[in-house]
Image 1 (cartoon, protein in one colour):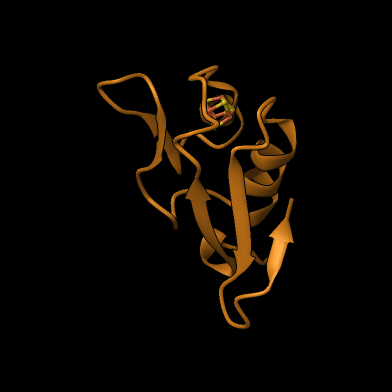
Image 2 (tube, protein in one colour):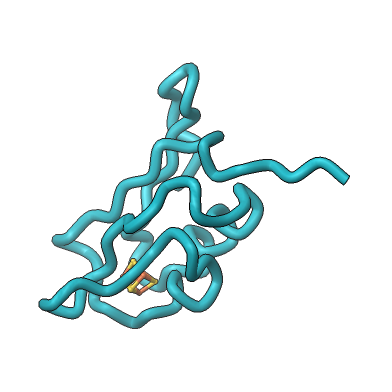
Length: 78
Ligand code: SF4
């Protein structure tokens, strides 16, 4: 089975929106981590599958995770 990596997306977390709920870490622990101030950061863009990254973005209560297509730069989410 082929694994799709998160490289499919450019991943950003908007620090003005993130409230540190940790949901993204739950859904894609290989990509997201909380920094010292309790906000989510992209620790490793290749750390999880694209499916899990999209799930994390969709579940973020603040819509703080922005995904763009890695090749075209077009916004994928939100
Ligand atoms: S799910 Fe959203 S609000 Fe919660 S830590 Fe992740 S980016 Fe921040």
